[in-house]
Length: 113
Length: 112
Image (cartoon, each protein chain N blue to C red):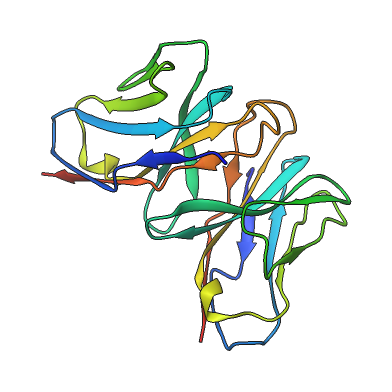
């Protein structure tokens, strides 16, 4: 089944403790992206990647890192999480060409205390 | 930067039509999208419209685009309880077509 898989689904952590949220897709998509969803703000893009070893900042990259060593994986790294990073995070992927639909994972709800 | 706006809530009775509205600022947008988010799930693409079209119909869904006013709407005919969800409008700027800018989302509640 074609899908985007994020792990974990739920995560509660403390300020400053490094964490990684994994994202994997099995559709051979070139493009991958991370979004955060906050009430009243919709989805805001954190980072995106057009292909292996190519990553770029989105609208809200501060406090996050990503890597794209393989085509299928695009982990999101929070080196020193803070409470303002408490949010619902979505990974998405698509083919590179225009208007290819974005496929979303089911989300990771992160709470930083 | 790009700005996409939607009202936050909409309630309709089962069987009525729902109209969800969206305004955007980027006049160079090439594609405009509607995504649906059900509870506990990611977003699913519902439909999209290319910027040189005025209307697109797909079964119970009708998308209207007024490019002059930068206004997009999604009409759901014969709304069902299963249509209760959050609906996101998104635009694709001319550059970086995969980088969508999303609205705040409209929570549609269908009253039985």
